[in-house]
Every structure is written in C-alpha cells, then in structure tokens.
Amino acid sequence: MQSLMPDSNNNNAKASIDKWVTAEVRAMKAYQVPSSTGLIKLDAMETPYTLPDALKQEWLSALGGVSVNRYPDPDSTELKVLIRSCFSIPDECGLMLGNGSDELIQIIAMLVGGVSRTFLAPIPTFSMYQQISTATATQFAGIPLAADFSIQAENLFEAIEQFNPACIFFAYPNNPTGNCFDPTTIKQILNNAPGLVVVDEAYFAFCQKSFVNEIATHPNLIVLRTMSKSGLAGLRLGMMLGNPEWIEQMEKLRLPYNSNILSQVSAQFYLQHHDILQQQAEQIRKDRSWVFREMSKISGIEVFPSEANFLLFRVDRSADTVFNGLREKGVLIRNLHDPSSPLENCLRVTIGLEQENRVFIEALSSLKI
Picture 1: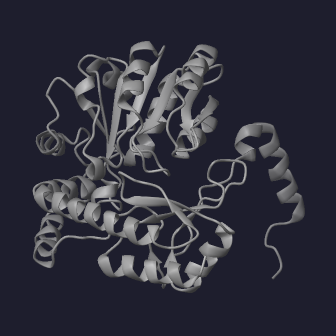
Picture 2 (picture 1 turned 60 degrees about the vertical axis):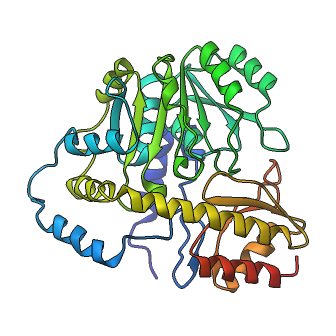
C-alpha cells in the first residue's frame, strides 16, 4: 500500500523531533500491552472478579442517574469520605485522588523532579518510576536488589549519600518480585532521606501491610494506593496519602476534573460494598497459595514467595520458549526475561479464577520444562 505521507514530510518531522524532543525520550519505548483476545489473561495483575450479577444491576442503575453533560466534582468530596472510612485514613492525613497511581507518580515527578534532580529506587521494580523520571528530565538511579530480591541496605544508603535523591520509590510489595521489603530498613531511610520517600502500596489488599500510620511522624512520607488491583482497573482510581502540606503542593499540579464522574460514582458504589472486595482479595490469597504449591512441584521451575496477587518464577530454559508455549495453549502471562538483570529467564503470572489457575498449571506442566 502506498504511503499517504510524502517522504519529505516524514523527513521534516524527524528533523523537527530531533530538534525539540530530548534524546532521552527519543530513546524510550512506549509501554506495550499485548492483545489477549481468545486467551486466559494472567498478565496484568487484574482481579478476575466482578460484582455479583444482582449488584451489577444496582450499579448500572446508579450510573443511569449521572449527568454526563456536567463536569464531575473536582474534589471527589463524597468519594473521599468513603475512602477514609473504608481504609481507616485519619482526617489529619492529606488525601488526593488521581487517574490511577500513574498520574500521581507523574505529579510527584513534576513537583520535585527535573534537571539536576535524581530519583532513586531498588530495581527491578515498577517500570513507571524510571519512565516518568525520564519524561520529566529527572535522573533515575536504580540500585540492584540482592539475589533473593531483598534490599541491599548498605548499597542503598551509599546511593542516597551519592545522589542526594529528591525522591525514593519503594513498591511494597514490590512489582514484579512480589516481596515486601524489610520495613525496618525503609523506616531508617525515612529518618535519613533528604527528600520524599514514596511507598507504593498498590497490592495492599493482598498483604495487609502498610506505612500509613507512619505519615503522622514522617512528613516526608507519601503513600500510594490504587483500586486497580481490587476490581476497578478499568476506572483508573489512585490515592495519594501524606502530610497535608505536601498534598497541598501536589494539588497545584493536579489537572482539574482528573477523576471523571463515572469513575467517582462507580467507586462510591463499589466501596459501599467493600466487604465483597475484601472477600475477593481473601480468595485470591488462598488461590495464590495453591498455585505456589502446584508450581513448586514442577521440575525446572523456581517460584518466589509473594505477598501480591501474582507470582514471579524462573525457568531453567528459555523464558521466551515457555512464554510462547503457554500462549499457544491459550494462556497469556508476562515475560520479564532480561539477561542483564536478576530477572533472567523470569516470568510473572497473575492469580486468576480457580479454573484459570488450573489451566495455567496444566499448561505449564505439559511444557516439560
């Protein structure tokens, strides 16, 4: 098919991009989301559960009363009240909502990042920390984890001394490794960090461990939460908790109406049935234990303990071969293979429905790793 864009236009565009887009951004790769059509989707840490059918009708009825021709409440006032109640967030703790936790990470980067500033995080970890650092012209320093994916505290403290980071990120539990870092080490860093310390608790529902109570005594602490792992991934609702003075500064960079009215009403409805979300999380924790045990029985696999809704595992052959073999059998997981990191020949599987988990185990076993 003949190109609709003359070569001269393409060349002009490339020349303009080279002039105005930083080399760091040009070198980046866009976040890739593979198609899952026709596959059992166990690649994205989503919960496999939705609302019971009877409640779905009530939810749709609630959405039917929404005036989409009007802007949403810019402060999500009613939703914040429910969030504080469901998650026991004290009134003296600042709270800001975002379009997923990604937007909140971006706001943090916009506030304290930039040229001559550095962000720091143990690696491997959530890729958005580095991607958003690069997008905001902030240097990113990744400090490798130990072979068992624990923090190498001495290396981390040396990096803090060297880089004087404006912000340190901890995913807790960590993505993609699934483990919670030593809380004593994180508290030591909170007491000595020159800038912000962000504890990203995206998987709180599956570990029930939190640093929220530390906010009162550590004004440099920001805690992130998300509803994406609790059945609301499609709504994109993130939460930022912290000292009110810091949240006030963050609010200056939050775009107006960033939480749309359908997300606000839906989240309010779901949180009114928070007990169901808790029951679903408990079931996922039980299923995680079963999947871990079954994977541990398969020769050629090293599966790592997890406090999230996924399991990281290493195979003693090509991860690409295992990934493609599972895909051919109708199961999509995440291939994390990186020969230059501790994730060499590693893959990650999300905990699904009972039948989905069984299909995954059967497919993995049949590959004869």
